Length: 330
Image (cartoon, rainbow, N blue to C red; front, top):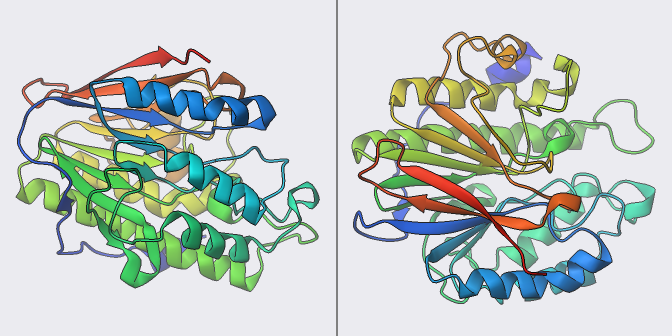
């Protein structure tokens, strides 16, 4: 496990994010995740999208991954249906890939499929124009498409640096596939490469934010690396997140200004500071420098996906970000 950390501890990248907007005027963005789960949620999803579209304040949308539940088939037809729904969003849409749409597709009730083949299909369907968001009013973003990770994107808006990072549950995809007791060589290689790209993007995001004197940094990911429902977390179930958590902790502490981490995965709204002084997660991940300025928000999902997070950016505020849960009419 220490070898995994050494292999993935990459340095900062020099390139800065592409601006997705200009000026320091307040704006709002919507965050959803772990939706749609099941037949009723699938049927309601277009109405939920129309409701977000109708919110005059929302200018950007972020989907934190898991576009299906973990016990349904990962079919091409399903991917295309959700992509068609995504195309209904009028505002720019940034989609962060989740584990249910590829990592866990080895399960018999999911197909079964080779997860890496499903990941390739996800990239083909949902990232047809690398370097641009989804949504009817697509805008440019900086991506890692040339490195093979078009889903990892960065952008700035209203003096805030954003990064969507491909980090998934199931121990960042190191949980053994069906019929195996350990990760396969191809599985491990994928995790090593993708995690190195994520760590690089984290460093690049903060490096650019410091140079641009950004007011805050926002990180968007599917995996809940600090699941509050797990009372006694085991390092064996979380070790593949360690390089990422260490990078986020160190960069956040060095940045000194507000850092916000939005994630899905655990399905229940949470607002906490998982890397602050005294947190149990510091020792689990071997973090030596607390990040008291990092605030984590988990959006409702799965059976709790009855609302979206409406996040307002106010560059002149000390907090920079505020948010509220807006119930879906459906």
